[in-house]
Image 1 (cartoon, helix red, strand yellow):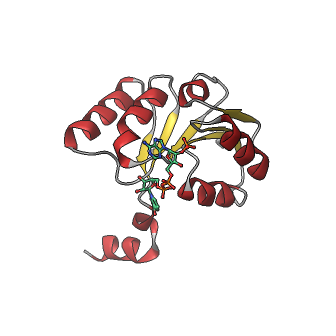
Image 2 (tube, protein in one colour):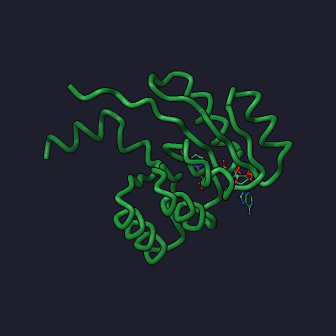
Image 3 (cartoon, protein in one colour):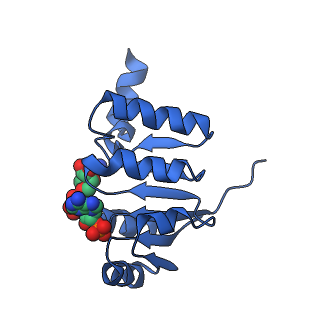
Length: 141
Ligand SMILES: NC(=O)c1ccc[n+]([C@@H]2O[C@H](COP(=O)([O-])OP(=O)(O)OC[C@H]3O[C@@H](n4cnc5c(N)ncnc54)[C@H](OP(=O)(O)O)[C@@H]3O)[C@@H](O)[C@H]2O)c1
């Protein structure tokens, strides 16, 4: 039997949706909010205190350089998704990136190629795909 992994999550970009993700993470088994990164230290510190994260960084690079981070949730604006995603993938960190994935197909292809090169998981935060009626539609065709 495969042992369940305990996943140490990081979040990059501490805005609206990052708060929702951090709240929901409390309901997930075998997962913890380990590190958060903002462009400002005070915001990172406040977010870390609110959601009990161990590490709070004032740069996205610093979070990506922490080898204890297993997976990162990218919650920045679309225009930053490619850059932030590559930053993590190149460190071997798995990425869940908010939708829309990037600004155009070239950026998405680059993200996928980098994930493939580093043998690292890359996923878009397209939660509607997992709603029950999508599964029903899939099996009815
Ligand atoms: N899946 C969904 O249902 C869903 C729902 C809502 C939003 N989203 C997506 O999630 C992403 C974030 O949305 P949001 O509503 O959370 O946005 P938001 O409240 O504006 O937060 C985005 C965060 O990104 C960081 N950031 C980095 N560079 C920035 C820049 N140049 N300008 C502004 N912020 C910058 C900031 O965090 P720091 O200051 O901490 O660095 C900011 O707080 C978007 O791509 C959006 O489409 C998805």
